[in-house]
Image (cartoon, rainbow, N blue to C red; front, side):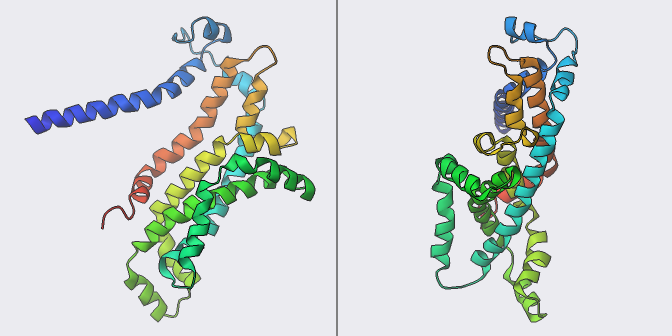
Length: 271
């Protein structure tokens, strides 16, 4: 009986904590169906009717174009991060070579570098090379996404049974074939974790996008939402509608890959 009461208490605390974290999202969704005037007067009120005008205003404000640009940048960045971090993680996990520890430590120092500390140098470099808007964003996103991705994938590759690799080597398979045919299918939780983490960061990143993008047709969602703010007034209803639209893809990705993410994060925690 005491254990049952303890379980109920624990579940209740978790539910309360989840509600606290969900409150900003709930308020955003509710506010997206309210008029701008009522939002300013009564920000915590409930909508009397579902007003879709904010979503119409957001769409007319080119939210669809911003969504497309963010999708292009996010997908390209995440694919490159996974493709580049997987061989590196495999090498550090399964191959023995001189200076492996030093090389891994060098890569992981990227976790200690604030991304925005290199904002001005990267801007000057992009301007000097004439790099396009998309490439100017994808390059830094991939560079700053690699350290954490290598760390997470290496932790999972270490746990893959060595017998599988030995059998593949006996059959004449090379390291690349072993990586893509054996390790990557087994490491789907780690890949999903890396993909979701990096996609969330790239999707929501603002400073790089704000500084590097020159053409208005290439604006991503975080920068595009700033267009709903004028000098003296902001269309908060359209902004909240745009934020709701921006959150939906990440929520869907997380719900689809939730089980894999939990397994990826706990890799190597239990021996």
